[in-house]
Amino acid sequence: MSFYTAGPNEALVLSGCCLRTPKLVPGGRVFKLPFVQTLQRISLNLMTLTIESPRIYTKQGVPISVTGVAQVKVESTDRECLHRACQQFLGLSDREIQGVIQETLEGHQRAIMGTMTVEEIYQDRQKFSEAVFEVASRDLVNLGVSVVSFTLQNVSDDVGYLKALGMARTAEVQRDARIGEAQASRDSGIKEAKALEAEKAAKYTNMIQIAQSKRDYALKQAEFDREVETQRAVAELAAELQTAKTQQKIRNEEVGVKLVERQKQIQVMEQEIVRRERELEAQIKQPAKAEKYRLETLAAAEKNRLILEAEATAEAIRARGEAEAFAINAKAQADAEAMQKKAAAWEKYQGAAVVDMVLQTLPRVAAEIAAPLANVDKVTMVAGPNGDIGASKITQEVLTIMNSLPDVVLKMTGIDLNQVVRSSRV
Image (cartoon, rainbow, N blue to C red):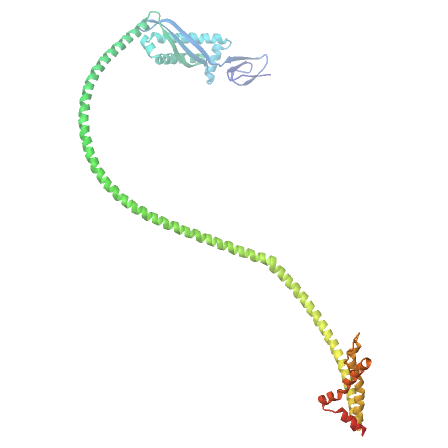
């Protein structure tokens, strides 16, 4: 079994065993049994044919030559037409097929030429082409061929009929042209005179209309000027009022803008204050609080330390004070007892006791008087012409001071030491 294909421009015709009628496949594929089946091809290409009909007598008996161009092809859309085309043309070459179709078209073209006049063929070519197309299409469909188009290409003759026809028509056209020119000249003069008359009438009418228009224009102009001045005054007042309103709106907007700016500034300032407070809180207050807490903690510790130290010192002072008080008390008791004993002795011995106390006190007084001299590195004695010099002078000065003591004691205490000494001798 063999497999065959055909392009869109040809058809496959399969016949033979197992087929009651030939199988037609336009632009497709088919399987063929070898030796028992036959495969043939028929072209579906468009064919262009030149149909020439020389010296064919028309209806008037005038011989003319006509050349037409036809576009034909084997019909593949209708199975019946394709079947008839296979019956008529299968096995023929393209040239042979074109020859059959061309002879058929030439016959129909000659037939149509014999039914029409030269003028009809020459002047109405579309009518001639349509007549040939209709007749040829009805005949060629029996051959399985369709006429795609038919066009009359050329019409000529060798007896000069077409030329004479053209000359007559040309002369007629020229005559009509001259007549038309004369009529046009006549009509032009009449129309020119009428035009001049109409022009003058129109001119006068136009002048009257111009004068009326000027008068109406002046009146309208005055009225318009009055209305314009009125409207201008109203417009100026409206403009001034609108300007005042606009300025008022602008001032209100400016005040609003300033108010908004002031509010924005206040908001910015408030935000700045909050920021500074937070910054102060972060940079100063918090460290200050921490420092305060630290100092308070240190102060509390120092206070506790000082309290403990003070308590310890107070305790020590109290103990020392108690000890000193005890010692002073003991000393005072001893002194009191001594004084009591001295008072008893003084009471018993009286003058002798006083003398004894004075004698015991005098060496201490002398020592106190002489104590400053012990701190002197060098002593220079200056004496008068009759005075003593040397160490005796110093001893004499000390004795002089000692001799003045009774007077000092008398003045200070009222006790006369000299009297007491004398009384003790008796």
